[in-house]
Amino acid sequence: MIHPTAVISPTAQIGSNVGIGPFTFIDDGAVIGDNTILDSHVVIGKNVRIGKNNRIYACAVIGRPPQILGFDENTKTGGLVIGDGNTIREYVTIHPSMHPGQNTVVGNQNLLMINVHLGHDCHLEDKIVISNVTQVSGHCKIETGAWLSGMVAIHQFVTVGKWCYAAGYTGINHDVPPFVIVSGHYPLEIRAINKRGLTRAGLTEDEKHAVFDAYKFIWRSDGPVLERVKELSERGDLAAPVRAMIDSLMQSSKQRFGRHLELYRD
Image (cartoon, rainbow, N blue to C red; front, side):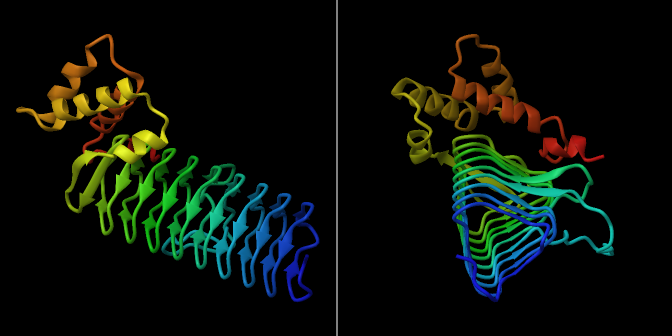
C-alpha cells in the first residue's frame, strides 16, 4: 500500500495497513499509526507522531517549521502529535511547537477542511470541526466539540470553548465561552446559545434549560457582564455546563485583552 514514488526516511516508523500515495514525503523520525492513509503529495515533517485510523488528503503539509519572522530552519523546535480518527483535508498546514520539548497537539476524531491552518503550539481537543480556509494562530486552544465555520480567523493565545459555534468570517480576538454562537469581528458578538452543540454534547434537558437561563442572565440583563457572571458564580447549585461557562468568563477577565493564555506566554 506504499506507492513506489513515495519518499520515506529510513528512521520513520510506519504502522500496519498504512496507505501512502504517490510523491508523499515522510521525514526523519516520523511515526505513522496503523490504518492511517496518506494521499498523494502529502508532506510529513520530522518527528511528527500520527496515531491510528487517520485520513490525510492530498497536498497537506504536516509538521514543517513554524512561520516565524526571521526563523532559522536549523533552530531546534518541538513536536507535533496527532491522535486517532482525524480527517485532514487538502492543503491543510499544521506546525510543530516552536519550543523544544513541547508539542502542538491535535486530539481525536477532528475534521479539518480544505486550507485550514493551525499555527505552532496550538492544542485541539476532540470532535472539532474547522471549515475551509479558517486560520488558527499560534498558542490557541480549541476545546472539544467546537465548530468553526469558513474563513474564521483566530488571534494568538485565544481559547475557544467547548461545543460553541463561530459563524463564517468571524474574527476571534478574545476567549469564547462554551456553548455559545459568535459572529462578527472587532469586536465579535455572542449571539445565542448553540442548541445543536448542546445536543451533540449529550446534555440533559435540565442542563440545557440551565444553560439558556444563564445566557439570558449574563447577556440579556442590565449591567456589566462581569458583574452578572460574579453574581451567578456565587450560587451553589449551578449545573456543570453553566459552571464551565462561568469559569471561562472569569479566566478570560484576568487578562486585559480577554485571552487568559496570554498570562502564560513567557
